[in-house]
Length: 374
Image 1 (cartoon, rainbow, N blue to C red):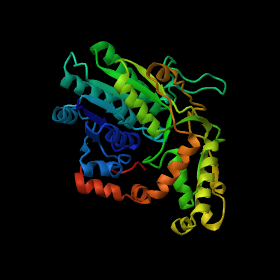
Image 2 (cartoon, helix red, strand yellow):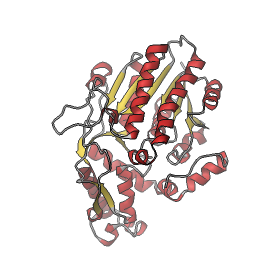
Image 3 (tube, rainbow, N blue to C red):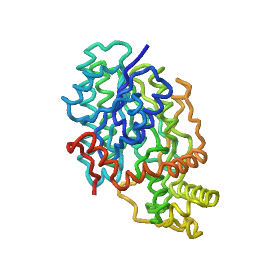
Image 4 (cartoon, helix red, strand yellow):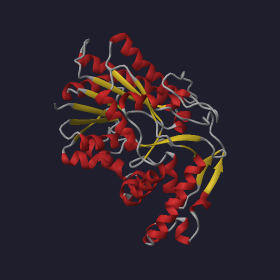
């Protein structure tokens, strides 16, 4: 049976990877993307899909009920997968209102529009999947057990609080209105198409450009790392097999300190330069262009306010109930990620120099909100 799957935040990091995944594994489905195309929503990330007709991309704000409702009525989605979010903790500290607006109100608007479309008693094939984060659970001590689905929420940043509030709204709509939802809380994602404000792509591109690698505090903040392709697989499994009203943690099973991740990243980049001498000509400001180890760029900076010390999720429920487990080894996945960025320089150059924002204006007009936060 052909479904219509509507993906919000489709031009963002995880949303774009999900669209590529879905087009490959479910080619019979009609795939719709809905994205405001802000600084982190890059249409170049899904350009091959839109060009081939595998994805129809609609520009719109999830907070605008009329626009969302019009898109839903036009496309008649069976499944809605909600990736749309402000997601960077540092930005949430500078501008928490934007996070409340998008992450809380936006989620509510999406559900209200879906309720209007699907009616009070949705057909069995209707589903809203909400993608959330492990940060809603707060922080762990070094010897604490990983977060489970029953861990009490204790968010410590405006970003985490906004996602926690959205999660509560989703569950409340399920209980109050019999709204057909599933929900997942994932650990730190990495992989292709990630906007270079997050740890791995930021430090990778800084190495290539010869800029310092800023490490908060002592660099011993521990995160569980999940390759974005494994995350996409997990959501597929949940959509296909989970009963409604269920929540699942999605983890990669790899807890590493930030400094350890950057050490591995530096080693992979240095090895790439040794194996491919042409990289020295492409990236003349990088340390390895002058035979200096990339690790020399590491600089410890003042820790950010409310910085959680450790995240880790227990994914046993997803494994035992639905048979999912992460497959990507972190060292191999990080190596693949580095080589993806090395092989897709026009993509990230466009992100850094603003050319993709010019592309947005050309295709969508001046109404597109595309300027990055200062």
